[in-house]
Length: 448
Image 1 (cartoon, one colour):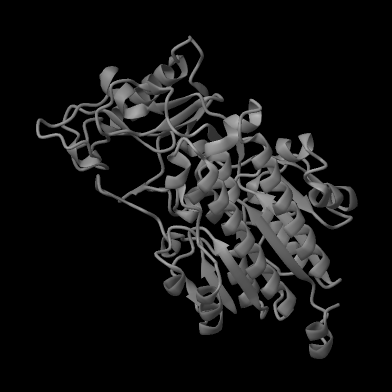
Image 2 (image 1 turned 120 degrees about the vertical axis):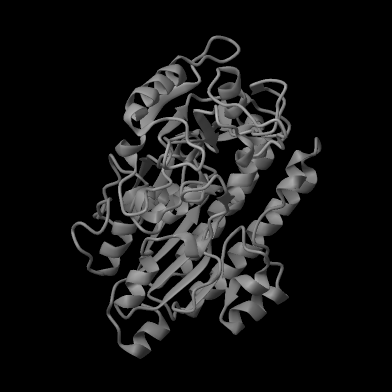
């Protein structure tokens, strides 16, 4: 029990959650020496592979992970979402998340919460003890609350995100250095506020792993030039988690979880180019390569990652698919997607999921009609601008998100990480905090 906890005489259970954007469980399992801390947590408590969500994109994943409800309730489906009744799109931010986050439930129960660098939380909430928003925030000054936190971050080397543009260079040295600098500063800030010991719930997210994996996963899988750099980076991350674990008071349970897995990317796949070639989508004559430029013969269009929308009468401004034909046309598109083959005859789609199977809630108006979970190697883009080919093997990224192979480690002897998914993390945190919620409030279940 920490000094502050002793002074305040509070025996309320406390939790620290460290999130990792894009850590595959298989990476940990295959490299136990690199991940000695996570391996130890798994041995003392439990750890294992969990499933992500549909679609397994970070902007959709973090609202789900931190709320315990599906995108039909959070209202966030990706980095770019469609306005209701319009072809206009927007980038979802914190205020677009319609679900109650785990720290809001904790605060409502009278607990203090420190929340650092969770994606899709800008602007920072004034209702929690302290918060710095995650990537897509404009800058640290606008992303942090209160003033003490803002001043500390401004004076340190803290950055909100790794510069992905550096990953496009052939020489990845500068990119790796920036990723490591970002990781170091993030860990220093987390350690500072963990050691303050004035919170009941601490949430801190490391996002640099996702960037490392996107640009260096090919090197890791195929023993390329930067494979050792990847493992060195993860070794440092594990050491930082170990240091934070040691710094935690004895009354705090540590949970470490990731949003999705990773696999080797072989092709960037431009879904709208495919739809155009297959006769599902066409553009107006003054085409500028945007969603708003599709013409009145379009029956379907796509948004990242692998979200397919029918152009439905009464739902879209210039809809062409009558509501009476919705099921028939959707089945036709689903069949075409299931038959879609890559350059070497491989199936692009591992699964094609109907909206009602995975999206349920009060905010599902902009849910896609179908979502393709691709086979490994096919990273699904939208690509409204004309492309020479549907399949591009020469993109700068060598790693792609996967639905399976996310990771979860719970430092508690009663934890059981089995047959679990991203929806189970929030109820697990609430159970460990002893914060009550209604049986139907969340889509997941506690793993403790």
